[in-house]
Image (cartoon, rainbow, N blue to C red):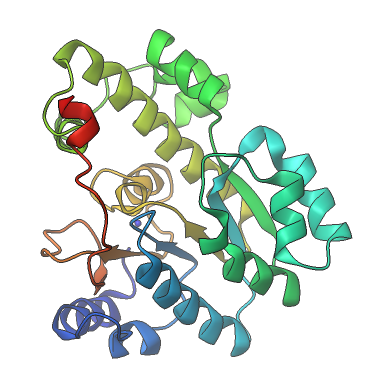
Length: 272
């Protein structure tokens, strides 16, 4: 998700690592707009949402007009989303018309309202649960047309490094209690989402694009950025992780540290 901006990216990575949580990195604010900007999130972290919105708002109000691709909208709802953008006066209306039940939509209200206020196109970026279930059952290629299968080499085994890292993340996300026989299908579903988002982003070119998605999706080593690099290596892509502590580890071009969200032990239900 990264190249011709190497100097700016390096500065951004260093600056963001040293900034206290709650403050936008100077490096992030000053870096040039790439062709594709991948902005991550911890889904329930309110501070991360606020900081990401502020980063995007400042760039848009300075004149940038990217397309916004959002993981939160499923791809089969694109017609509803387009209709909502034409007929709605506020973000709540867009959410009511085209949003699903899986998300805390009030966290996304400011970004959607920003898109309405500045006439930024909103694009549905996610596979539906039905699509993901088919991928778990039939493999990554089952949700793509023949041309995409060929371009992304989905008729071949997935790269071992991608599979290994994705499986590690999925197991950790399930408190290391997920039966191993289930992990393969879930890796396929995660990869299918990443490939789909990469394809949707390319469909928007030559317009600039911002992806709003989870940190796992915006990773440049195994996520959307990886798949963009496989088919469009000359594209200027930049990934920003909004993370609750920890280092970059080569996952992103830069990071914005955010304070951990107060939440119950996520492993409590799994352990039961």
